[in-house]
Image 1 (cartoon, rainbow, N blue to C red):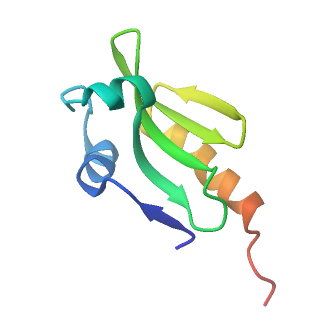
Image 2 (cartoon, helix red, strand yellow; image 1 turned 90 degrees about the horizontal axis):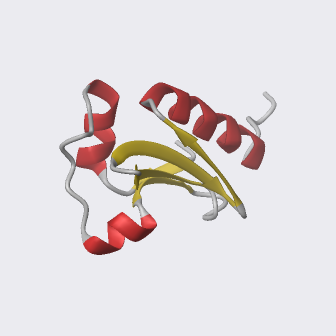
Length: 91
């Protein structure tokens, strides 16, 4: 596994059901809730954010970010970025 889970309960909830009931602290409302981060590049992370009153997923990498409505799209993007950061080793 080339990433580290930061918030396991919310990470697991996002995979199986809605995250609309997840409560944010004041800081998380501003910065987002970090769910996972690359072990190789700490600037690559998956967040749960509040965007105009709705929970969305955001993949942040270096100075760029992309918002996603659903878990699967965000997870696909995050894992694609992980593959660029640390390409699979040749066997």
